[in-house]
Image 1 (tube, rainbow, N blue to C red):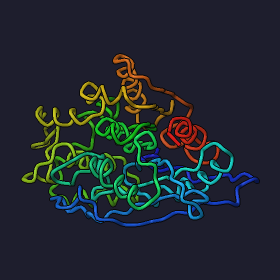
Image 2: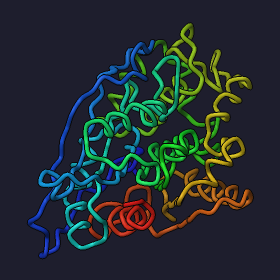
Image 3: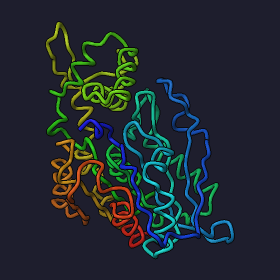
Length: 358
């Protein structure tokens, strides 16, 4: 369990087939000043890094390409994602084998001081939904030869990134035409993710931000479960219920006094308004206009809320007549994702190959 406590820690093993392509794309790593993050009150750096895979032949032609955007998970980054998942190798081989036509892959860095933006607009941390839906897309379209068309843009992500893919897909249906959410986290309250979570108590009893930052550092060293949840919750609070005058510059659904919990209903409502599960009704036209939408999750998921809420989300889409794919596979939160037998190679890339406009 300990090795799976990150929202995004991918398996790093990759068996490269003997026919691995000699024709290769290349990765460009740049930084740009993000207007949506500038002026934030939480100390987040608006100079953001972005990693871009350019397919074989890009430098030798004037051709324009469709684009897949991938959102990383909690406590991760663009470069870590490329390294852990060997994404360059996967893209090279997928294009060589015909699984994917030549396509640009974009990974923006949305890591924050508390390790997660949750791809949500916040007066404290900055407007991270706008960062993806506006800043990143504008930067990519300006600096690379893309097909500037929503139907040629795919949005995907894993865990916190899967949550972000669904949220941003609803908020920016004019920008992205196809969505693929892998093991989307915290779509709603359920299982291990409720107001009874131990992380709320840790936050309620901590003295200041330094305590939680130390806790996050401890989590990164020891994989301590309680520190992990505290880090997730403080990141969510700064995104969902920011308050410049409160400790951590955020309010929490549960507060503590003398060891006793107190429920904050107004804050709970703010969090629930930000859960993708509760956004569906307000974004039906955009959802129905998507070219394609897919959600998947592992049967043996380590975070018990993920399969429950992913299935609930699918059923809600079904209730409103929104076409989509939903699939449970044999695996946990991070297994069966990377490598040439993993779902990024076998499912995600073929999905976008089928539904993006080339």
